[in-house]
Amino acid sequence: MQSVNLTNHFLIAMPNMADPYFAKSLTYICDHNENGALGIVVNRPIELTMAGLFEQIGVELHHEDIADLPVYFGGPVQMDRGFVLHQPLGEWQSTLAMNDIFGLTTSKDILVAVGEGRGPDKMMVTLGYAGWEAGQLENEIAQNAWLTVEASPDIIFGMAPELRYDAAMHMLGFDPGNLSGEAGHA
Image (cartoon, rainbow, N blue to C red; front, side, top):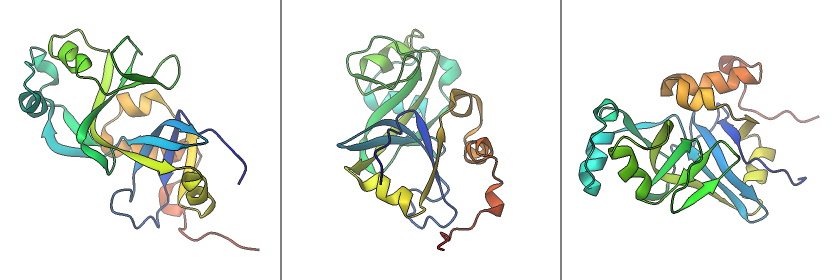
Protein backbone atom coordinates (compact mmCIF):
# COMPACT_ATOMS: atom_id res chain seq x y z
CA MET A 1 0.00 0.00 0.00
CA GLN A 2 1.24 3.49 -0.81
CA SER A 3 2.59 5.48 2.13
CA VAL A 4 0.09 7.99 3.52
CA ASN A 5 0.19 10.20 6.60
CA LEU A 6 -3.10 10.08 8.50
CA THR A 7 -2.04 12.45 11.29
CA ASN A 8 -5.00 14.76 12.10
CA HIS A 9 -7.50 12.36 10.50
CA PHE A 10 -10.36 10.32 11.88
CA LEU A 11 -10.45 6.55 11.59
CA ILE A 12 -14.06 5.48 11.32
CA ALA A 13 -14.61 1.81 12.16
CA MET A 14 -16.48 -0.06 9.45
CA PRO A 15 -19.77 -1.67 10.53
CA ASN A 16 -18.24 -5.17 10.47
CA MET A 17 -15.51 -4.27 13.00
CA ALA A 18 -15.68 -7.13 15.50
CA ASP A 19 -12.93 -5.98 17.88
CA PRO A 20 -14.81 -4.83 21.01
CA TYR A 21 -12.29 -2.04 21.57
CA PHE A 22 -13.01 -0.49 18.20
CA ALA A 23 -16.53 -1.53 17.10
CA LYS A 24 -18.39 1.66 16.06
CA SER A 25 -15.44 3.74 17.24
CA LEU A 26 -14.18 7.07 16.01
CA THR A 27 -10.44 7.42 16.52
CA TYR A 28 -8.43 10.60 16.12
CA ILE A 29 -4.95 9.90 14.71
CA CYS A 30 -2.40 11.96 16.66
CA ASP A 31 0.72 10.67 14.93
CA HIS A 32 1.31 8.50 11.86
CA ASN A 33 4.70 7.89 10.33
CA GLU A 34 6.90 5.08 9.00
CA ASN A 35 7.16 3.62 12.52
CA GLY A 36 3.41 3.23 13.05
CA ALA A 37 0.46 5.23 14.34
CA LEU A 38 -0.96 6.53 17.62
CA GLY A 39 -4.59 7.51 18.06
CA ILE A 40 -7.20 8.34 20.67
CA VAL A 41 -10.75 6.96 20.56
CA VAL A 42 -12.96 10.05 20.92
CA ASN A 43 -16.47 8.61 21.27
CA ARG A 44 -16.28 6.23 24.26
CA PRO A 45 -16.94 7.94 27.60
CA ILE A 46 -16.35 5.75 30.65
CA GLU A 47 -17.94 5.84 34.11
CA LEU A 48 -15.13 8.01 35.52
CA THR A 49 -15.78 11.77 35.68
CA MET A 50 -13.21 14.54 35.76
CA ALA A 51 -13.92 15.02 39.49
CA GLY A 52 -13.19 11.34 40.10
CA LEU A 53 -10.01 11.47 38.02
CA PHE A 54 -8.73 14.54 39.86
CA GLU A 55 -9.44 12.84 43.18
CA GLN A 56 -7.52 9.73 42.04
CA ILE A 57 -4.44 11.70 40.99
CA GLY A 58 -4.49 13.99 44.02
CA VAL A 59 -5.04 17.27 42.17
CA GLU A 60 -7.57 19.81 43.42
CA LEU A 61 -10.34 20.71 41.00
CA HIS A 62 -11.38 24.34 41.52
CA HIS A 63 -12.95 24.47 38.05
CA GLU A 64 -16.30 22.95 39.10
CA ASP A 65 -18.03 23.36 35.72
CA ILE A 66 -15.98 20.44 34.36
CA ALA A 67 -16.42 18.14 37.38
CA ASP A 68 -19.16 16.04 35.76
CA LEU A 69 -17.53 15.78 32.32
CA PRO A 70 -16.61 12.22 31.38
CA VAL A 71 -13.17 10.73 30.98
CA TYR A 72 -12.90 8.61 27.82
CA PHE A 73 -11.56 5.20 26.85
CA GLY A 74 -8.73 6.25 24.54
CA GLY A 75 -7.64 2.78 23.46
CA PRO A 76 -6.35 -0.53 24.77
CA VAL A 77 -2.69 0.53 25.24
CA GLN A 78 -1.53 1.94 28.61
CA MET A 79 -5.07 2.17 29.97
CA ASP A 80 -3.71 3.27 33.34
CA ARG A 81 -2.18 6.41 31.83
CA GLY A 82 -3.95 9.70 31.05
CA PHE A 83 -3.83 11.50 27.72
CA VAL A 84 -5.23 15.00 27.22
CA LEU A 85 -6.30 15.95 23.69
CA HIS A 86 -6.63 19.72 23.63
CA GLN A 87 -6.69 23.00 21.78
CA PRO A 88 -5.02 25.41 21.71
CA LEU A 89 -1.65 23.76 21.66
CA GLY A 90 -0.17 25.60 24.67
CA GLU A 91 3.17 24.88 26.30
CA TRP A 92 3.16 21.80 28.51
CA GLN A 93 5.99 19.52 29.65
CA SER A 94 5.17 16.58 27.39
CA THR A 95 3.06 17.44 24.34
CA LEU A 96 2.82 15.92 20.89
CA ALA A 97 1.69 18.61 18.42
CA MET A 98 -0.44 17.30 15.56
CA ASN A 99 -0.59 20.74 13.93
CA ASP A 100 -0.80 24.35 15.11
CA ILE A 101 -4.17 23.65 16.74
CA PHE A 102 -4.21 20.23 18.45
CA GLY A 103 -1.94 18.84 21.13
CA LEU A 104 -1.82 15.54 23.01
CA THR A 105 -0.30 16.00 26.44
CA THR A 106 0.70 13.28 28.88
CA SER A 107 2.31 15.38 31.63
CA LYS A 108 0.46 16.18 34.85
CA ASP A 109 1.11 19.93 34.56
CA ILE A 110 -1.82 20.32 32.16
CA LEU A 111 -4.22 18.73 34.67
CA VAL A 112 -2.92 20.95 37.47
CA ALA A 113 -3.60 23.96 35.23
CA VAL A 114 -7.08 22.63 34.37
CA GLY A 115 -7.81 22.17 38.08
CA GLU A 116 -6.86 25.80 38.68
CA GLY A 117 -9.02 27.00 35.79
CA ARG A 118 -6.13 27.97 33.51
CA GLY A 119 -5.95 24.97 31.20
CA PRO A 120 -6.71 24.80 27.46
CA ASP A 121 -10.00 26.16 26.15
CA LYS A 122 -11.11 22.78 24.78
CA MET A 123 -10.00 19.35 25.90
CA MET A 124 -10.90 15.74 26.48
CA VAL A 125 -9.10 13.35 28.80
CA THR A 126 -8.68 9.69 27.93
CA LEU A 127 -7.24 6.68 29.66
CA GLY A 128 -5.16 4.69 27.19
CA TYR A 129 -4.50 5.07 23.50
CA ALA A 130 -4.67 3.07 20.29
CA GLY A 131 -1.39 2.05 18.67
CA TRP A 132 -0.37 0.39 15.43
CA GLU A 133 3.04 -0.95 14.41
CA ALA A 134 4.68 0.06 11.12
CA GLY A 135 2.39 -0.89 8.23
CA GLN A 136 -0.33 -2.34 10.49
CA LEU A 137 -2.82 0.50 10.08
CA GLU A 138 -2.28 0.65 6.33
CA ASN A 139 -2.96 -3.09 6.16
CA GLU A 140 -6.17 -2.74 8.21
CA ILE A 141 -7.38 0.04 5.89
CA ALA A 142 -6.61 -2.13 2.85
CA GLN A 143 -8.69 -4.91 4.47
CA ASN A 144 -11.70 -2.59 4.69
CA ALA A 145 -11.58 -2.18 8.49
CA TRP A 146 -11.50 1.64 8.52
CA LEU A 147 -12.64 4.68 6.59
CA THR A 148 -10.61 7.87 6.91
CA VAL A 149 -11.47 11.56 6.74
CA GLU A 150 -9.69 14.72 7.85
CA ALA A 151 -10.54 15.41 11.49
CA SER A 152 -12.86 18.19 12.60
CA PRO A 153 -12.38 19.89 15.99
CA ASP A 154 -16.12 20.65 15.95
CA ILE A 155 -16.90 16.93 16.08
CA ILE A 156 -14.43 16.25 18.91
CA PHE A 157 -15.16 19.27 21.07
CA GLY A 158 -18.59 20.44 19.93
CA MET A 159 -20.72 17.28 19.85
CA ALA A 160 -21.98 14.75 22.33
CA PRO A 161 -19.89 11.55 22.15
CA GLU A 162 -22.77 9.44 20.87
CA LEU A 163 -23.13 11.74 17.81
CA ARG A 164 -19.46 11.83 16.77
CA TYR A 165 -19.27 8.55 14.81
CA ASP A 166 -22.25 9.36 12.58
CA ALA A 167 -21.08 12.97 12.14
CA ALA A 168 -17.68 11.81 10.89
CA MET A 169 -19.35 9.30 8.58
CA HIS A 170 -21.57 12.06 7.18
CA MET A 171 -18.42 14.09 6.38
CA LEU A 172 -17.77 11.38 3.78
CA GLY A 173 -21.34 11.59 2.51
CA PHE A 174 -22.35 8.18 3.91
CA ASP A 175 -25.24 7.04 6.00
CA PRO A 176 -23.67 4.42 8.30
CA GLY A 177 -26.77 2.23 7.93
CA ASN A 178 -26.16 1.90 4.20
CA LEU A 179 -22.61 0.57 4.46
CA SER A 180 -21.77 -3.08 4.06
CA GLY A 181 -18.95 -4.60 6.00
CA GLU A 182 -17.86 -6.66 2.98
CA ALA A 183 -15.15 -5.48 0.61
CA GLY A 184 -15.93 -5.69 -3.07
CA HIS A 185 -13.73 -7.74 -5.40
CA ALA A 186 -13.84 -7.62 -9.17
